[in-house]
Length: 445
Image 1 (tube, rainbow, N blue to C red):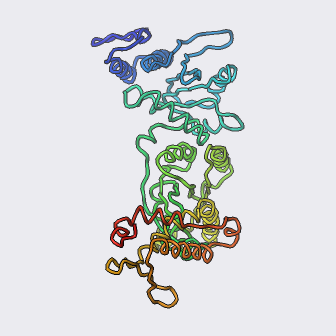
Image 2: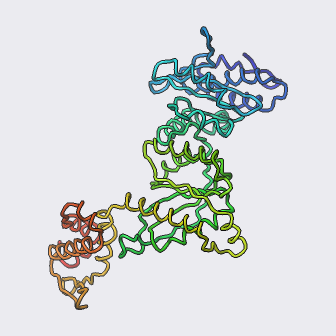
Image 3: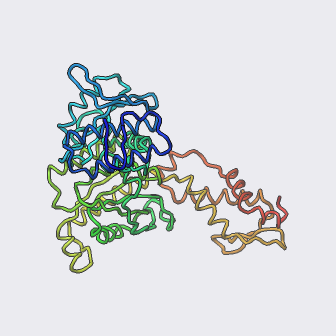
């Protein structure tokens, strides 16, 4: 199959091992297809298949051309990392619905168990396509759209990279439609990082246990009010969070793929979605349930919570810049408090915190006296300095203080589950690593 114009002629199906300008030729032909106004949808689809096989050949993925067997036709296939992929490509005017993909899924499921499907819809999919494909089914098809293929055909990224990203997202979060564009430029606005105290660890005032909590809102206009709601519970929880705009409530279907992208960059503990009360309807709850099911089946399940902001709360805030004290808002706060408490307890490691936070603070309060070749530590009860004259004595003192702190401040049920601790070795290692110059000055080597 050939594409000709006055400037160039390229036989796409003949590309075996392209020269260094092979990618440039693929980019050129793709641009021709974008600009063409004469091709029918069927002709454009055939040329898209050729272009797809050319990029697969270029990346040495062992493509096979389309073939027909009794009862079915394949656009093509390729082999990568011990797995066979069959693909179907559509460049139609309308978005593709799930019903248009069911037949292709049947072809995939009729093959050996190491076979997966790739469906390409250049003009995208209906908003409920992914949910319909996932409903009660095992994920065996990855969805590509025009944005994905544009990045590939223009050489911005390799097909292998996009495929690897989508496979990882499907494995981590269950999503079939992870958009590679989200990895290139993530629509995130960091609004606030609030550091609060856990109700179960009252003595800690500046440690963030939830290292990174994502908070999704419908639009950027909701950043301010949601930030206010979150800060209204700041007296109770350790929390650092980042607000992200979904640019529309029905884009919650993109949350699993976004989370998969974000988890590759940050250590994520959970997420919360704040949505307008006007979408609190049965059909929308079905979509929420599907997203929740995807996340619960993910390789790394995440705590998640969906909340609905009452209309009166938004109205009050728009006129007064205050979130008010409506009963419906208190219900949101209670759910939020319960969610944060469970997440904080699940991810908080008291032993790690004692060594990473309490120990450094204790060492900062020590008076290192080089002239006396000793250290002085102020007694908590008498206020008088205690003299310590050796490293072993200092380690023993600090070990006692850490165990005391642990006993006084951790909940009893946590203490019962923990083994008897001795931090002496960790303390000794920490001091030698971080205070070696002071040890040498004291002659404590």
